[in-house]
Image 1 (tube, rainbow, N blue to C red):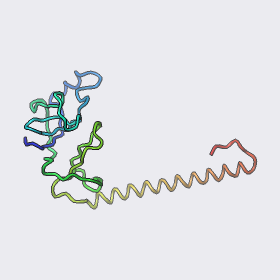
Image 2: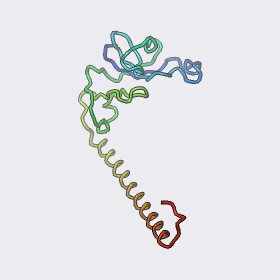
Image 3: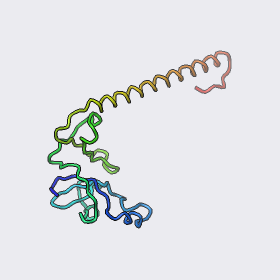
Image 4: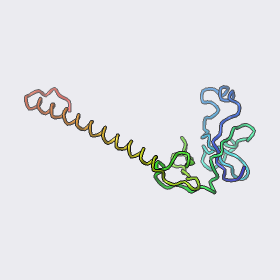
Length: 153
């Protein structure tokens, strides 16, 4: 384990979560860990480790995601890259946390085409919805012109 290593983690003992009551054993945990100063800690409380955020390696199952010292912070458009080329540090207590790009990763044409298709599909749905709105408004205006004021716009 090296300083800067980023891990996805879970407890080795599944019963631990069941024994923790309503909020479970992952309450106030991001399940993302980073090694700093030779110690492993959960990133829920940002990069300010507290006694509650330190993890014992013997208690957790770790999946190495990368080392932040070997990754490039991605400033925008993570959706242009394959998910496996990214290390996303965002979680419920840190929506502004960085997303890192793994070495050698480049924008992926297939991923970008899928995104473009999704956006095109969304735009088409918006057009169809707007057409229905226009028709409904035309019908309402016709009723108003004929004296029926019990319409909703």
